[in-house]
Image (tube, rainbow, N blue to C red; front, top):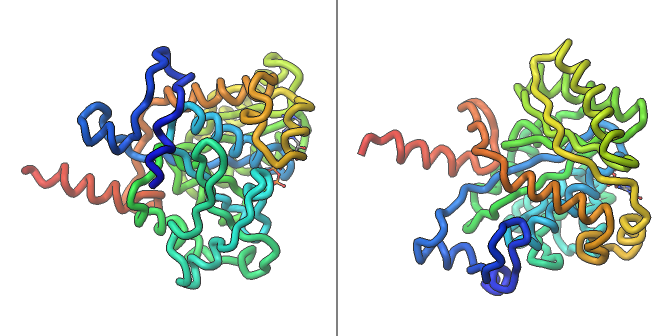
Length: 309
Ligand SMILES: Nc1ncnc2c1ncn2[C@@H]1O[C@H](COP(=O)(O)OP(=O)(O)OP(=O)(O)O)[C@@H](O)[C@H]1O
């Protein structure tokens, strides 16, 4: 890992503007407790609601705040995180699955130390992966020598097993919605499938492309009301991202708006979302029968703590 990544950053999410140390360096000195990677899947049901935009900008906002962040593009065969960040992958998830590359060899470096695992685009085989192959991708993260602080997983549209497995494998699910009837119905359908068939009970709702926070809260309330009534789930209002022309311009420049227009309304909103994520409490830990990101790590931690030594 490039040591410089952690050295020249400021911590705008924290009150103190101190010069941060690289995480490993700090952990070695006993300054920082070594944190377990928090895994967050970004889903939405409907296409075009802003899942990839939220993944990229939330990831970069956390990165700019001094966190080690990795993005996984789980929209297999229709990858776009690399395009949004102007990266040119030479290898992708397909190479991991056919055994010709390890996970570390797929990592692309975006500005501010953000790392991206590309999914590959235009390969039909990748869009037709089975559950076993998705599970293999999830398990490959156990091999990372130094896990990041955050792994953000961008998912495809729809309620396929692919989306469900990646959501169930993460600590948290962020649900991106916008003010369109199809976004609300698709988000509800996704919550229903994820909760009923995959045991995902908690959702952090982000309202995207809204005019103001009142509109965002209205969307959240609508979704929460119907979910509360019919499903055994908990939704919380995580925040909003305004409709913003600066964001569209950044996308055209293949950059994150938090990087190229940091004072824009959408960039400020993404920084607030990053601040929220960074203050979340400990995640609920997976049950034994679940395929989880870094599940191997959790198992070995459990084995160590449960040994009674
Ligand atoms: N806050 C915003 N303000 C203005 N435009 C936005 C905003 N968020 C997203 N967009 C526009 O919506 C488009 C779709 O966003 P994005 O690709 O992130 O959606 P998605 O949910 O990942 O789509 P898909 O399901 O097809 O992968 C973007 O290219 C951008 O033009």
